[in-house]
Image (cartoon, rainbow over all chains, first blue to last red; front, side, top):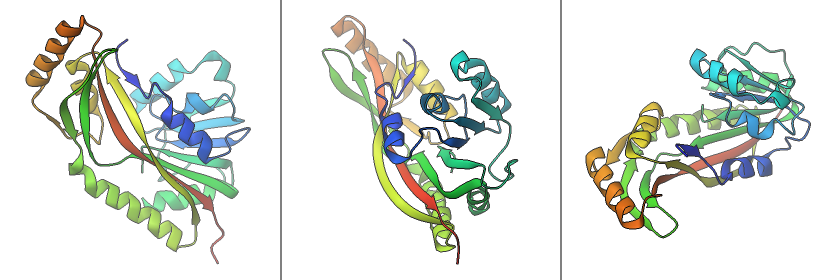
Length: 98
Length: 143
């Protein structure tokens, strides 16, 4: 079984209660290996994860389920220099990154 | 951090939502868990990172004071980590910024884990539940 993170889904439950992810354009800051993004991407319109660590980005892109690839992307960036136009997203998630 | 929050304010649409999810500095029990047993065998002391929490809280407070965001909700939940072995646990904790000190030393944890596994016929996993903050803010228009 190896390592398991939040198998009970407490984080996802809290997130879905916190914000309207349905059809939302979501930015995730500190997306890491994509673990969290994959959990809400199935209901969102689009998800962009930014992550400074190239190794984590590679894992996220590799592990992104085929069914999510059209609406999920991962970009090497930090919140200090966001490469996006103003008013691009409905939700921004600081994922263990503040 | 405040600069980053200003950037997030910019890329959010009107009335957009900012969600801040992060583990809180704390002392978390390390538990050995099986279908038959739940025993605390150690602790992860994360209190050494309290300064990080304070800095993050301060940045958020400043962004609210600037009128960029309005606080809408704050809650906490337990984020659970499960491992098959002490080696897995220490390896992962070593990679995490909130990780500080595992008590007792790994060899003692390993011994306790093996004793429980022998007693319960295997299948004993290690668990650590970290209190985690989830705070929600709405983008505001500064006056």
